[in-house]
Amino acid sequence: MSSYEPFVPDQTSDSLAVYPGTFDPITNGHLDIIHRSLNLFDRLIIAIASNPSKKPLFSLEERRAMIRDCFPAGEQRVQVEDVSGLLVDFAYKRGAKAIIRGLRAVSDFDYEFQLALMNRRIEREVETVFLMTGFRWIFISSSIIKDAARHGGDVSGLVPDHVCEKLRARYLTPAP
View 1 (cartoon, rainbow, N blue to C red):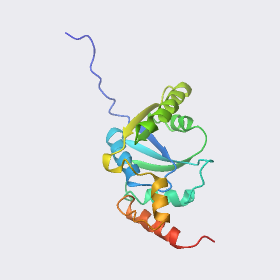
View 2: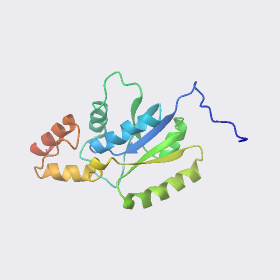
View 3: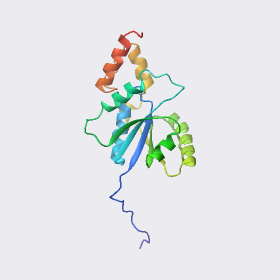
């Protein structure tokens, strides 16, 4: 006979996770990770990170709007916020139990594993959850999509329709 008590989740609290990224632009691969995260957590903050080493194609406001347009107006389980500074501090201050990280390839794992260990060292209350990108999206990234769109490639089916339109408009309209 076993001496342990089975785990019974507290039905009065909900679980929150943070999914960070630059989302420049959001892709169907990102949406795959978001929807699968919502199967694991009650709520999700999509945290748009500003990365000083990257020059984004779309402003924070444009990226925020493109992400929000992916969800029905009544969707209460998803929030979109900007984040700067340490992500693990952001997650902890919001009461998140986990940081979601999508992995496409083994090469992603090495960096993400080191980052997860550092985050765990800084804040033990926040776990890192790795989700493998769905097989049909494993080859795409925002950078690859922008490059294809910049050269006139068809990226429909790789990003939501409204994002595809934004990419077409951005690359067809000369920069001021």
